[in-house]
Image (cartoon, rainbow, N blue to C red; front, side, top):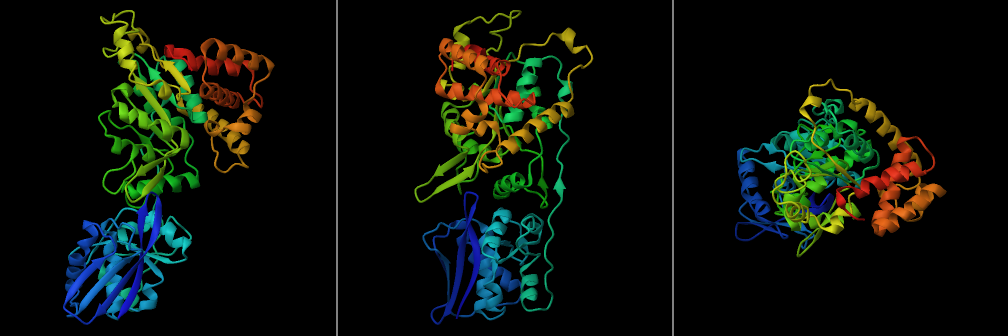
Length: 504
């Protein structure tokens, strides 16, 4: 007796279809599971056996073989429990075969037959929709999977409920999508006193998704500024929310099926490993750069991160994706994030503070900032200093603009970019422009071109630095609602490349 069910195996954000074949044949009683399963999948035999026993279903005294096809694709995770149980029940003729073959199933079984939620329900629903199949999942995963409107999602609390559904005793009702969560209220930019230049750079970074490095003495407000960046960013579009939620689904970060329209804000500690930052480890899970996709990656104490971790960021910043290489597969994750880095000018932190002299100047700063390589520093579009704020200024009332005011300008600038890239679906912000499109939209007027030529010659700008200045100038022009890039826009963009004593 042969029966089939279907599930998925995850390769990055891609869910690949897996056919679960179950054959019951004469022979010595045995329950074999083949098809390159990992330890969690191999243990599914005992969980399925116990769940069926809890339903008073005994396995026959025959040879049971379950094959996970394609057999050369690694199978990882406990979500294979439910499809294995479905194929086995269909082979035992307890549930109809034809109904099972039109369903993609995933879910972990407890020993009493309850279905436990698993990660990856959202990408699994996307795969089921592409194959025009129904998705069957645990009840707690249903609201998450139901966000894919093109697929019918059946969410069951237990294996017993699944059997009663397929036998017509108590059909399951389709799951409904979860709530749109707002998340915590963003912090207001008006609370930051002083640091007007850093605030302006933060606005430009938000408008065009330009990477930014802030350098200043301890307590000058770098982390405070970064924490207020989500409050001026526009909400995720529907497509961006789905992209981001698929990654968070694989990481198990979606709770109660809710999807947020707020952009991610990730701030890993500087002791994080390379696998934690770029992805990898067991199952090649997404790292912080991918969890920050369409959002913000804030790296405080930037030079304190290990050198290999910092250098690994160079390629994802340029390409917008990270590839986790394994011996038998290459897993790709999107990671188009806005990088905000903060650093002290030296190890003691007071190299640039005239009131507190650094005892090891200038070697202290050269050694510390020297941990950031030239090629990585060259990838920061905006470099700003955050000088210390006098305590007398802290007693004054707040006079800066609120996050709502700045967010309105950022949204207007983003709207101009959306209209500009209407014919380029892969482009979303000015930071993505290159080639002919960059020349057509960011070429400055004659005065601006002459100014940029003098700056490039005097400060020995790299080709990357030259083009990044054009992108930043285009964003500044968008914030000014200008159709053309002019000399003041170029001058301001150049000023953000020359601070911190860096070239290029």
